[in-house]
Image (cartoon, rainbow, N blue to C red; front, side, top):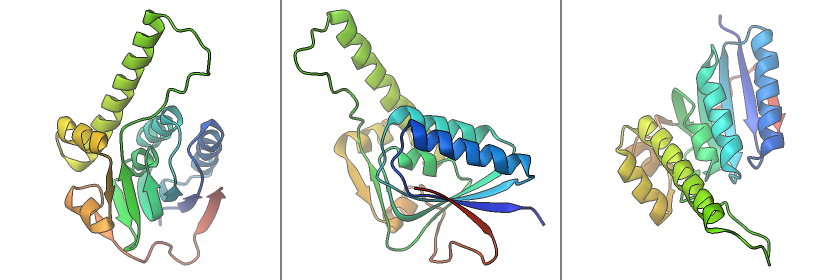
Length: 183
């Protein structure tokens, strides 16, 4: 039987939580684990670490299952998309919205070039997020960008209808499996 590890991710998405997550997965891979179930309840956080976790999970030699067991908000939706099997408990939520990243300090002087760089960065991040969700849901990127701009809160049934969720189930942990927490 294939070894399976459950990782419970109850954290905001930032550099530290991404580093902790990737370190745990690497250690488990070294121990022969090739099946991960990632339980997610996260308010989201920063774009770069979220996309890094997604890319990492998609690039490793293991099968990934993701589970929303509370709320998968903002960039944590991208982590959820890494699962080939994507499960939600019946009373959860998903939030898909546009990105908010630039908070310049007061009394900062910015050149036109710097402002253009920030704007281009936001556009690329939005497009990358939309592409990931679109590939997962089999929707057009433009449809997902429209959802992002509107800010969409989905219940599990709505998430299943758009293809984000494969299964709605209360059974998320099998008895006897190793559980590692990231808080």
